[in-house]
Image (cartoon, rainbow, N blue to C red):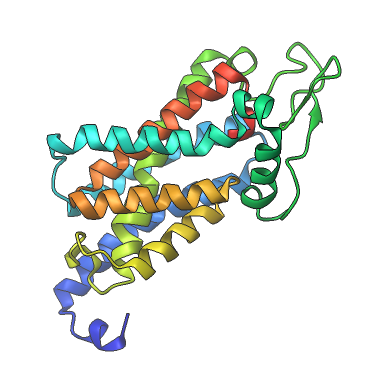
Length: 263
């Protein structure tokens, strides 16, 4: 974004642009910051969910967007289901049993940027069973993951599902697709046509999006899919619904198949 573009903004535009930037960035920054502050994963997610909800109500980033178009709901759900499949297919029970080599090389190439070309670390979860996630080591809930509703309780699990399916979907879509994608193309960002496809920016944003995800390969495809949906529909709510659909179904998948490595 050039200095010339910044200088052309009127005082009123500068004020409105600053308000819009803050409204999009602060909830996202809070979410990342609280990931570091809390050691307990269960309470961390609950605190982030509550904090995210409060900040969304305070800053209301949706003020700079039109309302949801009903015609975009079904396509958005379809994109969300597609991304769920992309996210889990190479590590699903069927693939692990029938094509373990595929799972191994997927893990080596597209999971955990901090440990390239390595498979997921396995942990003993009891009775000699190895799983790609850690569990509670002692006490009443020994052998269970901290997010397992039998350990955390169903109310906390419900808050977790609400946080991942609603709050983080809203926060991330407003930040990555609504703000960052257009901010990198000009200022004030909220006046940039969201229907313009700019491949270099879309790819860069998708890569940036993937860095905060353990399954970074799937996350790049995820970022591209949500971004293209937003560009095609010019409806930020469509990408939010897609994101929320993926996260909600992933939560159900995690509990059904004990696939807590995805959480």
